[in-house]
Length: 288
Image: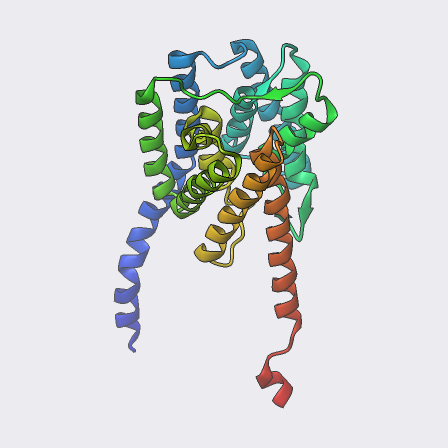
């Protein structure tokens, strides 16, 4: 191929690069937009926040911790979209009459991103880890959001539609879909096992807690397996299955504990398999 043809063949790709960069830049703000819509929709229609002060404290603490730890561990100022999502998730999901659990949960959440790593990979979803830590450390003071939308369906429909579009654009929709489908199937199985109405078993997934759970926690790119979409769907189904078992055992915070157990296990298995494959010489090298 001549030098001129090489230049011509590369020209379209060079022109397309800025458009791709703009798309990546825009995508960083999609998740914060969605979580803000969940906050506003839930608060305006149902009033599920303990107080604006507690939620603001969780958000500000998460952002400050991200700035400090990001600068210390990486030497750069981090992008704050992730910490905003973590802070607002803590502000929505934590239930406590006191202020300090919101600040402490955000501190644990952000700190886990920098300290709990294996081969430079996150192991736990930060918000999930922080919430589970608070449930263990302060069970008498901290609970989690568990209410549904009641009879108001329009906020739920609007947020699920917006969330699905955003997650689709971010190429994580298959994880959400796999989990939701598995949850519904396992809800019917729980109904058969317990004798409870199937509507009561399916109802939790309509709540704001599950909107944060299915759009942010189980789809977090930093803490999901990377090998294939099929593996990611398999992990999502496994989380739903473990949650079903925990619900049958009457564990109150079943979804959080299910992800806490399954997510890191899947990540560690994938890391181990990847390391093992890279350490095994190929047949071609063995023949030499």
